[in-house]
Length: 307
Image 1: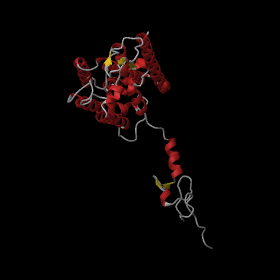
Image 2 (image 1 turned 60 degrees about the horizontal axis):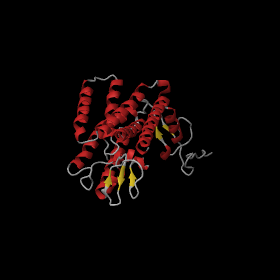
Image 3 (image 1 turned 180 degrees about the vertical axis):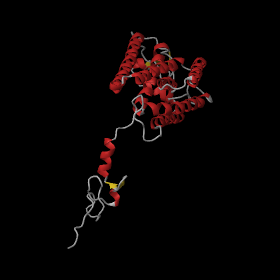
Image 4 (image 1 turned 120 degrees about the vertical axis):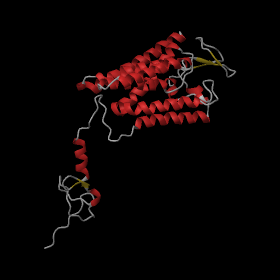
């Protein structure tokens, strides 16, 4: 009497006599997955992976299976692509830079906004409803030429220094916070820098990722303090960071730097000291409240400028 022919449960045309050691279904070589004892089928492997609780950092971020800082890479890529766009079309800077209030005259010249309506003039900036400038300006940098904001060689140096800082700080912070929390921190820091610029210097055009990067600097400090690490090297780093903010105030937007630093610090403190049982809820709520406060400040400032 001949033995019954057994086939793979996923590929019925394939004859096989090997079965999954968990569910005992017959599997072909394409469906076999090595196990400590024998082989497992695809479904059993997936079920096993779902039952394994993913490791998380002190801040609630999932420990990545890969050491590649994907969000940092993506942010650097966006900045670089935007800069290449500036080289092709320099007008991008004037169109998307952070600007609170300005006037474009019929002759194409820019004028200081004074409030009210000016026939024949176009109101630009946040007072003109261009709220996107709060974030787009954080992905632009001083161009080599073609804009009143900068000229060669400082334009190129601007993005090089910022991307170098983003690479060094970003990958460390991303590893500890996880991708979602890290991205929220970066964007809120960029927004916080733009909001402080709007509150203090609404008539200035500003560009650069510096506000977000200063937020990462504050996060780096809070993270190391929360983890109980030796703070001597970290304190030296922060001292240099703050010294650079003071020195650069003569030729850069100190308001954007300070706004990013404060916002990044607030967000990371919320991440670091949220109660473990309600950690994700508290962290998300803190980010939402902070976002609401920043939006409210923009609304109030706009009302003051246009009122």
